[in-house]
Length: 143
Image 1 (cartoon, rainbow, N blue to C red):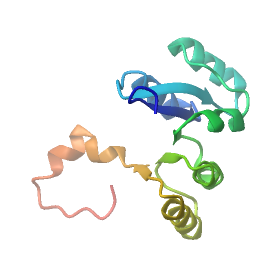
Image 2 (image 1 turned 180 degrees about the vertical axis):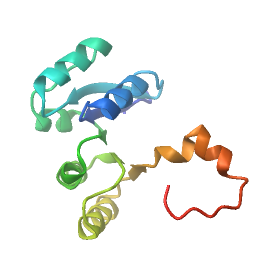
Image 3 (image 1 turned 90 degrees about the horizontal axis):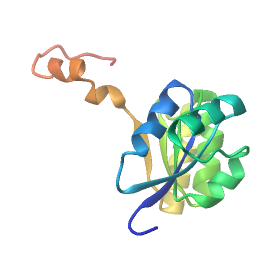
Image 4 (image 1 turned 90 degrees about the vertical axis):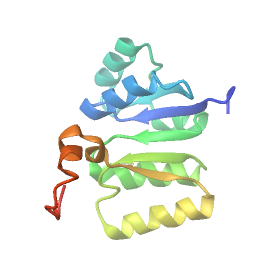
C-alpha cells in the first residue's frame, strides 16, 4: 500500500463506472491509479473529466493496482474477476457477481485460494427509498 492508501483501478466507465471513478477520487484511503474501458473514447472522456490516467489495455492497469472495481456488462464480470483474483488483487464487482452460478462459485473459490476479498455492489441496500421501507413488514422477495 502507498502511505496507507489502497491502489485501485476501475474497469468499465459507463454510467455506473463513471460514478465509481468519481467517488473513488473522494475516498482518502484510496489512490485511483487509472481506468480502462473497452470504448477508448468513453475512457478518454471520463479520464479527462476527473483527471484520471487512462489505460488503453486492461493488463497494464491490473499490474499496477491492489484492488479493482469491475463495472462492466455482466457477461464480462467472470473474465475480469478471474484475471484480477489470479493476479492476487481484491475485487469489487457490480451486481450480479457473474452470469452463472458456476462462474460465481469459481470466483469465490479463487478468492479463498488467493486470500483476496470479493465484494458485490448491492447499492440498493443504501438507496434511501429502500431504507425507508425497512420498518414495514412487507417481506419483499426481490429488490
